[in-house]
Length: 307
Image (cartoon, rainbow, N blue to C red; front, side, top):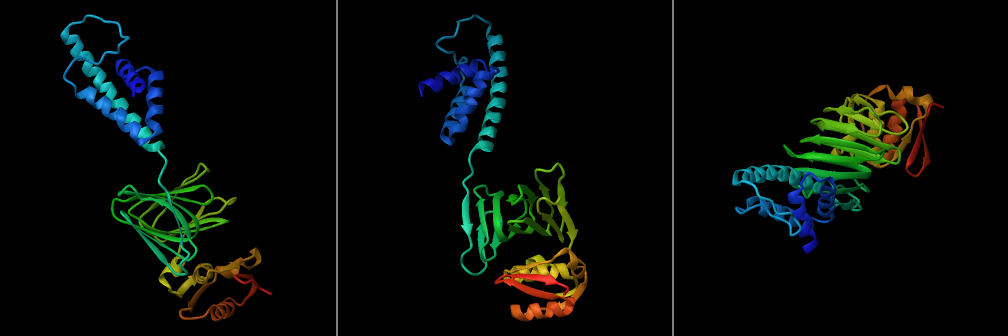
């Protein structure tokens, strides 16, 4: 690569030149092979015991050996810093190797990662990059997904609504839909950021609701209701009806619409055991406990009404 070799020599001689820095950075960002080539060339120069590399077009000058030595080591220090910055920029801009996965098995599915594992409910869809053994990057686009990370494993998850989840060594559940996302934490802490200027932190047993155009909201749950699809447990003691309805929805893959006029019923705390019940039996018991009607709208949609 004669042209890039000449560029590298000029860069070595004038590391502070913005135009040369930009040219080297552009070359490095094109591919891992080119980045490695530049890194090796600069490393070879830094470890060379001879005089500094001189371009064929450079003007010959005379200086004392002491001055040349000082100049060489100052230039070396500058180049080391610049190489580090260039390589960091490349790693940040290099495209990720994302793997798409949709759970069409009709049952729960799991993915083992270097830093933990992911469990997907039926029909859940994600994309992920786990090439780094100490970090996981994922995009949850649909359905229920549970992440369990090992100690020292960091994780970044993108969810609908342009929200970003950041955590380390945590366990948490994400529910993604066309309306937005809900995040429930079972272990650790999760930081949430988005297009809005505000950020939100969730700790164990807290659920964050991220649905536009509403502002992000969080609350402490009285149960593990968001995980009913995974635990297969529908037994609740003194738990708000809203949590129970969410659990039933994820368990049976249905949707229950609650109009504003019926929201007060969802604040009612219930003690109810829905284990080993059919969907029809579950709906009947909920109607009885809520003193309300759950009218079937479509095959997988119910409407809560007080009439």
